[in-house]
Length: 96
Length: 96
Image (cartoon, rainbow over all chains, first blue to last red; front, side):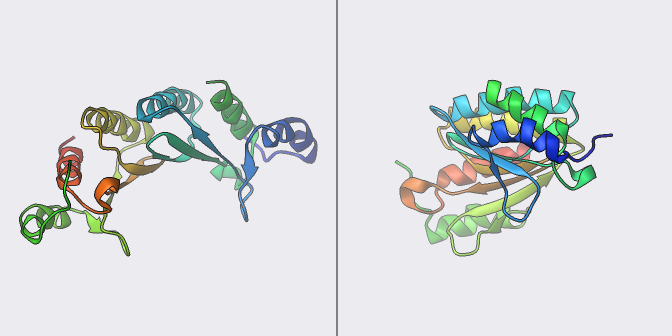
């Protein structure tokens, strides 16, 4: 089972994401980021890679796509907040 | 160029969609539907098929996915409303 991020985790793991385009969602212990691509095919190609990692780790984003933009929100429903799974998936999404 | 649906088109082409789970979006000349699947892999697999048709027809949905659900909104931005492209893509999505 995943556990909610501790204060120490937030300093060490969450802060770097917040310095890299991720933001806290207002009123939720969740993070969000909007990625912009050259076109739809590039955006959906990225989503496909991210989807495979999501399924592999059994941790799925809330996400929306409009043409070349993808807005992702990450939260761990079982802990009603951020866990290490959100950090791992956010880092992977930034790498892809 | 696509043109906005006529009243006649709406009776003949839009009404069958509205009887099949599509709804008008409040305040926009657009249609929306939420599809539910067995799981994330099934939902994203369907999105992938729909994405290929979207790109082929150069007509892209606004859509959001949360685990096994996909909510789609269709509109033709160049006519600021519904065109035959939206009908064609909605019909294809229902078939997939």
